[in-house]
Amino acid sequence: MHIVPIQFTIACFYLEDSNLMETKCLLIARQGPGDHEDVITDHLAELEELARSCGMTPVGSQRLRRPFVDPRSFYGKGQLAFASDEAKGSGAALLICDDELSGSQVRNIEKTTGLKAMDRTGLILTIFEQRAQTREARAQVELARYEYELPRLKGAWTHLERQVGGVGIRGGPGETQIEVDRRMTRLRISQLKRELEHMERVRQTQREGRQPGLPRVSLVGYTNAGKTTLLRALTGEGEPADMLFATLDTTTRKAWLGNDENTGGPRHALISDTVGFIRKLPHQLVAAFRSTLGEVKTSDALVIVSDAAHPDMEEHLRIVGTTLWEIGCGDHPRLLALNQSDRLTRPQRLDLKRRHPQAAVISAIDKTGIDEVRNWLLELIPGTPQPRSPEWWELKDGVPPDS
Image 1 (cartoon, rainbow, N blue to C red):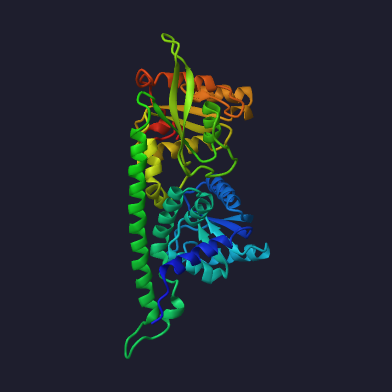
Image 2: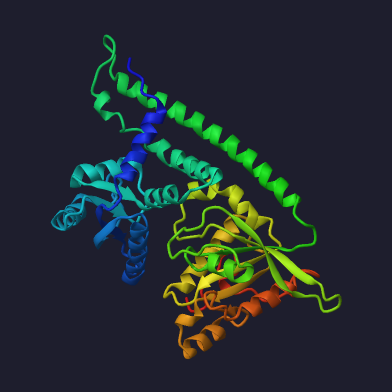
């Protein structure tokens, strides 16, 4: 019996991902009876940004209207035929789906359309694979990829399942190979988890070895909101980049906040830049990046950085608030920093301050409002900030006031 190592099997997935660079793609999303058209349009716009971040070229997008999910192909043969015709007419070789699909659904879409298919989770994983630089980030992304691929291994050996092994026995080498791959994949997942647990212990030791008395503050928020730019404005360090998920590894730097009014000595805080959040953040990534997100959990306070000029800012805040509760940080002291205010008109800034009166309206790129952030951080040195009323997006079951 011919046994192919699991390293080869998983390498095939990476090879397919690497061939996606500069591939033309068509974006599709299901629109159900209760889905507003503008919401689906926003989701497709973000999916387009994700595809471009991955090096692909979107040639268009389609809202596939269907009252219920087709268990076999998610979208149904008729809608897929419509999307396939447009994709092939535009020279696209790939369909990117905004919904998370099972392995069988991806294979049925590919069989129906004759095109390669990828779901949103697979796309985000591919971006993380491209961005990962350090050993910890690579291990975290590899773990997320294995856990994503494990239930999708069935079908990778369908060419062998047609063979018959032994006398009077249905099945054969194909079924055996699937079990071998699953067993070796689970083994690798266990190895990666042990490796990441060791890295987490090292990270915890580093936290304990930091200078006592320095408040620890994490910059969190939606991806590409300007967290790294704010880190640079506060500490003088950091390499901002206008792209989704530019930061995968937590970067911690000391920030000067001002001088003590009594002693005249300098006051500092430790500021950490963290991985960004996004809607439909794959649960595999949340689990794999638990050590990185652990920096957020052990922080004394959070600075929530939001792109004030983004049309979906309120939705982004809701997603950030929900994600913070999911990782156990829902009740941390926090300051909302509404960034990129330089892109707003004065009436827009005034309206923003009216809707978020406790927020700091800033521009990290030209350092407007940075002193307001520093003054808030100064309150952390003698103790936690004064109690305040949380906004709707910070509540566990946050609901917008106008809904």
